[in-house]
Image (tube, rainbow, N blue to C red; front, top):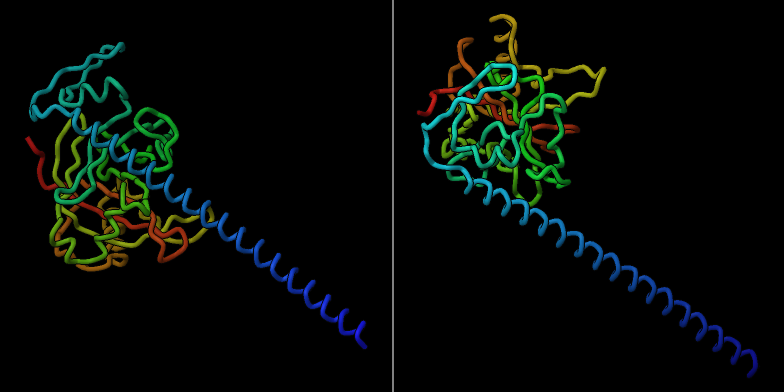
Length: 276
């Protein structure tokens, strides 16, 4: 009986030790996961902080001479008039096509244009190096000069509240009332745009059925234009009270949103004046 009791006691001690080892392993694994996650978050936010600091430096390089222009002549003999205030930036990277901003918000970024490789700046910075946040860029199907009736600009919705994450705030109509104007200056022309539609769209896979908001670029007819506008009204989160017509020109800012699979937050604004 005594030996049997000792064996039970040994088994209990052994079982307790095994349980303790399992707990220690689980604790170590949890610590490793925590440290790994914390390290990832630190790197993520530091990278985004650094990217925003670089954007601020780029913005400081814009010369505030407002209306001063110069004529550029190309090898084929063609010429065009461009704003000289972007000269220093374009000397570094001539993919720059302009700057988009909304007063009183963090949204103020260079806009890139590479029609030969539309998504080149999806994950590249101004130095053309890899950077997850990338830079806002124009849809390669759009034309800048002469300007398409609608110019689409894409940008990331970053959890660090940078890039086009600001667009999600337009889900609140009060935010729209406070920030109704988008400024989009290109190297050829400066302009202000009144927000007309705030909507949730979707990026459809090839073969999927559904309305593709991003095909609104150069409607072939007034009927096609009106069809797009009818869809915009259906998708809109609220009525902005802004009227649009076939003669208007637009910009469209688009970023990801997560209320649906492949969801997009889309803000459409009509041109109200060319800033001189």
